[in-house]
Length: 323
Image (cartoon, rainbow, N blue to C red; front, top):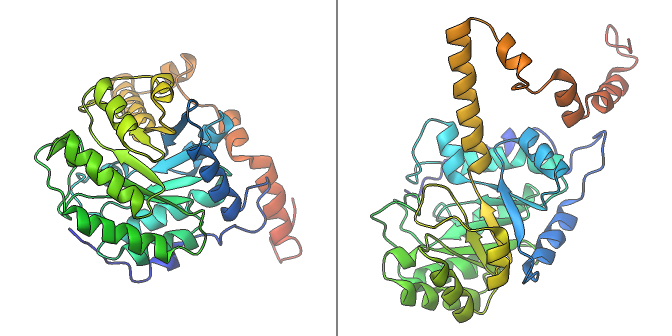
């Protein structure tokens, strides 16, 4: 709904970008943006892009070889107990992304809905926060999940203007602008393809066709659009389940799984709460291996490395020396 509400947003950054004193090496923002650019030309070898809900999940994803990550507006609103209806202010996405990007070397893409009435300012803020790219869509401001009806899209010329504003606002040419079109579910495939080519011509670096219904539609889109492409492989939507290898064969550069890990986590958390209420103890969960161990979590966050860093920070201070 064009929510702004960003006053003091940058005050919420908990670390500078990049943060000083990390116990492990992290790529710079510029290096991450170049890495994301490098994925765009990988036709025949689409990159798996995983939605992450926080820095811990991002660290796990990176340890398993994920080359690019995504912060979803739908997941972020869900984590606040809200629906994905364009009601999330920009500052929430900015703060969340700024608490993930500094801790991983993989590039982070952020969903910025329709641009929050100020796409140029949005690009500047997210670029400054160390983000590798943003995704902007062509729905009206009172938007909804791309796999739910009814939807409305803005005139193509309005979205073209947003893309031009976005590309003009970035300082690093490798900061990636992803243009999503929801037009296939409104005006049909012909309109979606026409818009996609207009958006690419306006400077969008990647085109994201939302809610296509068949493999044939994805293939047609790839054949008719001359630009790097991203496919959205969400669950319980209009798109049938397909493998990354299938999208690779059609020429897509990236395949996005925006909320998969989060949905699995919600189910696991719900089951754990059921067990606690039913059994009055977590022992069954521990015995079954259903809980991440303390040692596993310490390894995931590099606890020992952080302990050294914190010890150095407080060395010599009264009452806060090394133990």
